[in-house]
Image (tube, rainbow, N blue to C red; front, side):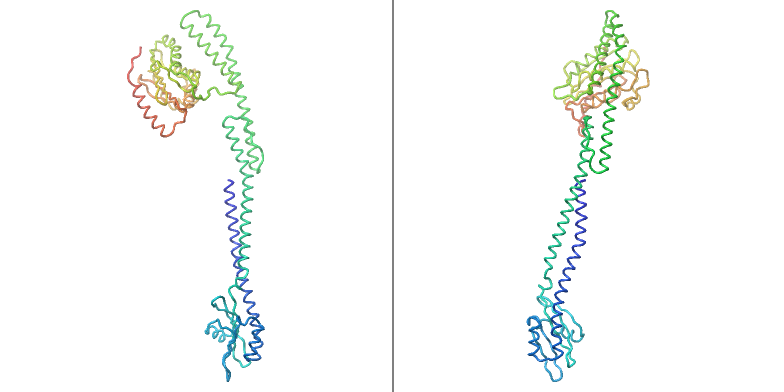
Length: 465
């Protein structure tokens, strides 16, 4: 905006200077020419009275010498009855021009080498017409023109520089508040909730700054209310969790009782994490730095061990592949466990008892793929299932499970795809990008090619225990 305003002022001022300076320069040139020829006319007028009285050569030479430089003035008297032609001074004009002036009887100018001449006709006492020739050098015609043009050029340049300086100051006055507003919006978008902008500058930008600061205050207030609400709602869960923990303690021994107690303990930890995160106003999922993350294979084995007890109770066959060696992923352990629990919980919630399922882990060069597949009825509309809050419409479905998985994968630059599994049901493919960069178009092509290779590997028939 600043440079645009400077360019506009530069163009407008330059046009104004040209529109006024060029005509003024031409007027100055014409005035200098008129001044020079006016002096020549005065010299010719000083000689004309003498010509009306006498045509004597000696007397006329004295008159010419007293009127001005005899080298610049010439008198041409034609021959008459009993008289000879008289030419006084240096003739510069052509004979035909002198004859034309004598014939027409009015003054004229003609160009000669080094300048111009004024030809002034004068009537003699004999009735003949004499011509007074006054030489006007080019230096007199252009005298003072160069200086005047230089002054006009200097004034024009000064006006242009002044307008540019004023436009630059105005641009700074306009751009600086706009830049501060943009920086404040960027800081607010980066999570700096204390970002505010000074309310100064032009009226429009002051209004925008006031609106931005008001919006930022409302955002802070809304986030604070949301955090308090999340903490309060989570705190309310502690009472039923305490009852569940006491009831689970009275179940006695056995795999099912132990699994129930572990589930209640994990639920209590998750509730405590939600309360603590809400109170501290920190995100629950943080981008992992170099060396951070967890072992995906270990998390898969742990969660499958947890869900295996329920699978045995419902008569489900299950399989784990690729989790026998460490596989690092750049996500937090608790987040990956929550994502796996969401997917496995969907399998148990939305497929009939006895439906088989499998979890496969593959470690590629720049990515880790986790496949959760089942032999259930499948998902009719995968795109709608990925929409946050849509759910399946069944009891206990919130529509947040797949969205949680998707956001976790996208935090690493990966994604989530839903398709058909070799077991005949649904396959959810989670792609974790190891370098943490958002995929480019070329990256998408390379990734699709690797994905086809991985899919062909995973789609080989495997037996379930």
